[in-house]
Image (cartoon, rainbow, N blue to C red):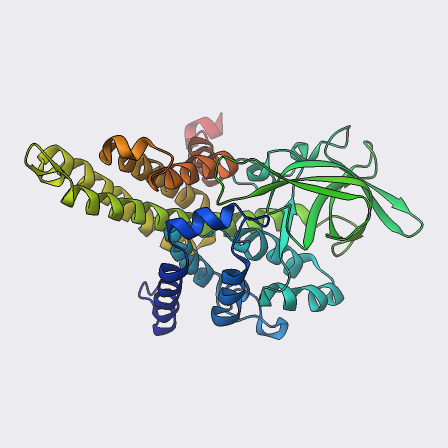
Amino acid sequence: MDAAFTAEQDEMRRTLREVLGKRCGPDEVKAAVRTAAGHDRELWHELSRRLGLPGLAVAEEYGGVGCPPGDLALACEETGRALLPSPLLATAVLAVPLVAALGTPGQRSALLPPLAAGELTAALAVPGPVLAAALALTGDNTPGDWAGGGRAGGVQARRAEDGWRLYGEVPQVLDGHSAGLLVVAAHTGGFARSRILLFLVREDAPGLVRDRQTALDETRPQGRVQLRDVPAESLGAETGAGVLPALAAVGRGAAAVLAAEAVGAADRALARTVEYVRRREQFGRAVGSFQAVKHRLADLYVQVQAARSAAYYAAWDQDQGGLALAQALEALRTAAGEAIQLHGGIGFTWEHDAHLYFKRAAADELLFGPVHRLRAHAAHHAGLFEPSVTPERAAV
């Protein structure tokens, strides 16, 4: 493993940081999240055209850049630093890999080029607030309970003369209110022969009702999706055999990307706090000159750097994504909490930027955690707590 970044990766990071530094400051972020889409469409198109951001991990034959998945994680470290509100996570990290893995040749040819170019955005609609369970981040997703178990609830799919029809409601979908394409997980076959399939639903489909929901973190807008006899197209084969493994694979990749994003946010929160305590004076001297403050920031620096190392390793080996995400979310939560406390009274106000990082930390743990379950699942998957069998006991 060569841990050094290539010249192309360094240039991508430098350019992205430069663009976001000019176009995505705290005031711009607050203005963007209050738009109907929840993000700056102009900036999204600039990032798509200039850097090919949504198509970084898409194969060149489909109009993408063809970079390894780790490059997307490095890019998201920069978007995390700026808390960029964009459809990048929902489109490039969650939806595109499913289309690439499960889609028919015709579906891939029709959907991947506009998704890679940023002309089309997508969202993954999973019934209920169980996205982490569906992506196998906090447990095994094969039982299918997260999708309703074939009983009432969730989203149901029914065969019709003209194809498939979907019924149900998904209350929390990242960018679900504005995405041009929905990838919907639904049950079909009734209770006895129930199986989970993924379906494609266009934004103009009759019977589709969407509205934006109030979210803890405005930089991750969420929408409620209601499916009222909506025509849909099955993504790939209709057997459902590869759906759950594909969702788990997407979960591993998403965990690596989210870990890098959280590290970027934690690093920026720490840098802003250090800058503040250097110039803020109390009792005639800078707050940062007090030993207790130095110790707290030094401990936080070590925690952020450890999380960065874990995130970079997970970008190379996505099987370690769950552990890296747990460490990164914990580092972000600590960094955001220290930022609020060390900024003093102003840090507790909604007008200050520190609360943006705190909300991101809390919301990400609700969506993709919690931390202790991420670690417990990773430990179970690695067999750390399996009872050891000695030769003597085995003989008995």
